[in-house]
Image 1 (cartoon, rainbow, N blue to C red):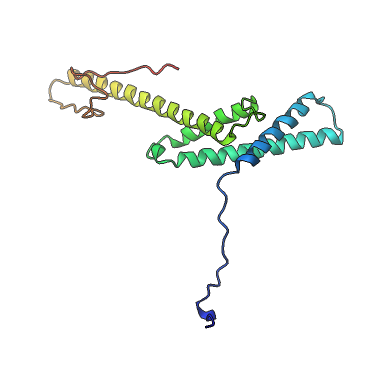
Image 2 (cartoon, rainbow, N blue to C red; image 1 turned 30 degrees about the vertical axis):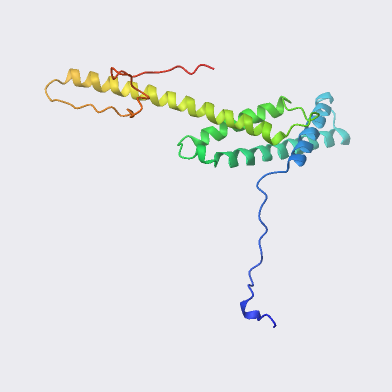
Length: 190
């Protein structure tokens, strides 16, 4: 039985884009960046030889490849359901990108050991996400306390009209208020 051509799709089949770089390729890019960066640091700034240009170009190329891989990884991590719903997601991504880039430039990852670079940079990004969430929650608490104090002061000054002040951030678990309905602020010192 022959297949009729009227049922065959004429749309070209698109290849699925690869979201992440492979672990071995990422490891190779990091080790090549470290190698060329070391060679670049040994060069004289005024050296215009073809070898010096090649070393500078390769250091830049591998740094950009590593940066692109880290950026894709962090963007993918930001889509994790644990981090959805936060309005400061862009700040979380930016903080993680800065921290991972500092780790890459500072050569904190050791490519001679058999660690997975994806998990190393992913852990850095994860911790930065959590740090930003704690920082923003602390800011929300401070803003809530300031708003409550402002409204209490406003109510004391204007005794002519009764004003009902509803706690804005009170929860059933008592996260922000203690038993006396006083605001509790914890310091998150690093």
